[in-house]
Length: 253
Image (cartoon, rainbow, N blue to C red; front, side, top):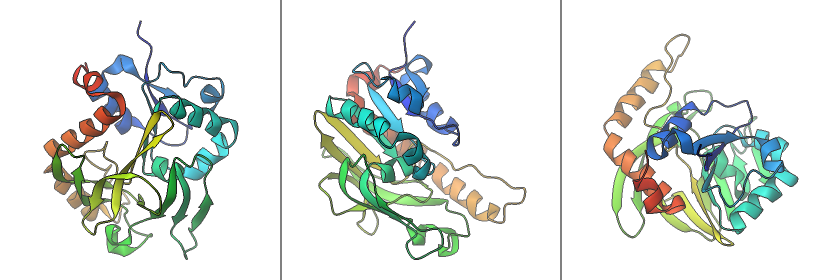
């Protein structure tokens, strides 16, 4: 039986159902699995793992579980030829430092151990929050332009509080409309790292109606994103192809 070679980090707080479904759609069920901090410490990130995905959520939980030995294992995996995909919180986590909601009671700032990207991740993008307020919905259909040197693609992606990247060395694969870096790529040792501000794995945000004062806003975002399904699929698979090789993506189950 084939063992998973695409691993999603989980810390038992965040639900990664949509991310898992998106990866299964590309690679097939047999190839996609999960790992936690204990598994990483035990050496699960071997050369047989073609992709390690650090998902969205809240990066302080990642710091709590992985600082020290866990991060050392992740860095060694990438430096020896592994691939890391960081999405939203997973992107903040992989930068040298972050600045989240500066000047507010929710502020989070400081350095990060993993430091794949030598610059700073700054967020959220206030104009992408409902009413430009942290107290309202963070969902937005964020327009980006992706250019990897082979294709130029304009689309909208699910934004939920991700950063912009600045101050470090990286190839910029996608920008927001204002020119800020939305998706970046770094080479780390023999490995490859791609960090995405927006949730490129998601076609739609989760929309609740009961007790959701932002239901109308969230529904409008969902409907807007639905118009870009084809472009979103192309973007997602281009990113995965860069990380795992075109053959591994094109041969997905």
